Image (tube, rainbow, N blue to C red):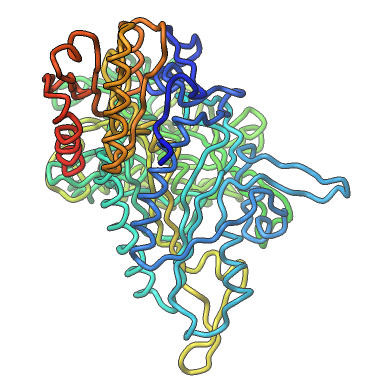
Length: 606
């Protein structure tokens, strides 16, 4: 029987002693140093034999669990035509985040960032009846996004590997069942990979749809901040909602009055001027939380049924003066539009907006009474409650309102989640104050509903012969990102320390010294391990020092290490180590294979 052991003397591998200069996180440093990946360009990586082995094992676990809920695998091209993405408006919505190209005939194509359209069109092409449903299809495929600033190795790349699945059902109830089946499979996948995760309520964003959850791997390098409630529930910051705050009794609040506030365009100057010229009747000083700050925002809408091209709309958002606007939170509520701060050109179109003294009385529902014919829409943050009295702009230079009451003196076109969330803010479920952690998104599940089936006319005949749209769900796992997250959470100062279930091998056999007896003992152990079906890396390199071999074994990160050296062989023993340093023992050479098999079984049962 030929040996399948990976022999270091012939393996395509070059380990590095120093961290790559441009590697910014531990996983990127160690995966390159240990010879798992090689950088081809910013955000683009070559998979080497060891890295591909780990990747394949992660994919195998994903396939096993996803096949187990009845999903079926397909494989789409990465190069796709423009038309399907134009039908769903995502050719424009993705902006600069996708790679667009033309073929020799000047037809437009893209490198797929995701494949909703293609899955939808495939089912439309092949299915026409409720009898064909439900069905869930998935693929594991390379995706492309033109990241402005790739970082963190495999965690934020321009080319990456994803598993994406799509469910198709005749009704909403079926969609929800498929959603929870997939969600359960995700939990089993991450548990099997020994990767800590937190399910987090999320916004659907450009994907569209209704309910959505992200699976985040908690770690300090994460780009996503999530909020954790005492109940254990978690939310993506963009998805947080502020519990309804009680109305304030304003019956004793004086009538609103305008007062001069010269040189008071900033919050700090407003406070100083108010405390100097208009002390409060209750004796406390004015502070930022008493001010209603009105922020001018431009909404960049994509083309739609009423507009043949993208268009700009100026809006104003009122927020408490001690809070900062969180553009990502605010933008999530206007998706698929994008937000930016208003420019001078935007403001010139609305002369009623007096910089530094913008107030609500020329905005929204009350604008017409002020003589503004085409009013700017006005929104207030959820922390601005009915009956609350504010110190705010009076729409005149160097003049502000005092005691302007929301609900009595002015109204808004809507309530939005606009401000940054703070430690101590109440959780949406009311269980107590929020705390915050950082994490890396490793998966997300969406109840897409009818967005893509309506856009692409995916319909079937129901039980009554009526044509109805198909309900869809979408489910993604960042496969290459998962690998990086496991490397990020499973290492020490010496190198990687893979979970046994995905390690490139299960035992790393090291032959040390110049004594042929040590190499003979190691060869015998390799044969015995392979007979037991155990995967082996064998460091059979001659004329390489024991120190180098031990450093490489720790860097590569196989869970069990077995050492055959002159001293152990002369004593009739093999030294066995757990990679994590938890145990080291010399056992009789005749018992080494059995001992390693027992230890491996224990590791696989964790």
